[in-house]
Image (tube, rainbow, N blue to C red; front, side):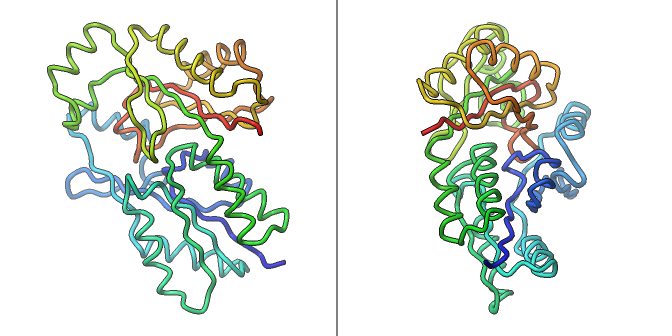
Length: 284
């Protein structure tokens, strides 16, 4: 069976140790502060991102990896003995990453590279990549690996509560007045995955109520099915994420292992400091 390498980008929110365990390469999303460019997971993480935002009052701009960055990842995989590469990219509805990954394929005309638009983000994408890596490790074919990942996508549910609208206001995505009133009233927007993007689902008053609502939504999404995988998402809020995990486990039968996943800068600039949420794969 051909050796198949799995590649993705850092908008998958996969923790570095998990990616390393499965030998998954993550091509970094770029973060631009003016003329300075930083690579997610290499030069910048959520902590350094928000330290700079709070210090300067400047919200950066994310951009897709260049075709050259993908080419480096492909070359490294082939150099290590891979006969094929499958690259799972963040939703093309949110980023040009998929296009860049496709463009890089032109530099390897003699190699087999498959690029997949996951139509998902953060751990929705990440769970697809994990399923693909496990299938590849088990000796599955390219088509079987892609089918397995796509099948998992249909069973992913994600809900997250923002702590503040401050950063969305700074980026211009909501009006400053609206954000100020929402924060004054202690309103916590809840996000979900919708059509390949993080989208506003509803608004809840207070963090406690927002967490409670996120857990209610997760329990409803799982229904009577077993939960195969769970990840707690957070932005610079590990202690809060651990508290949230305790509350989640009290309401939902979870696997023994739950991933703690930082959202990563390409996405966290929209969620902001303090975001906490859950992504799960419901069983069949």
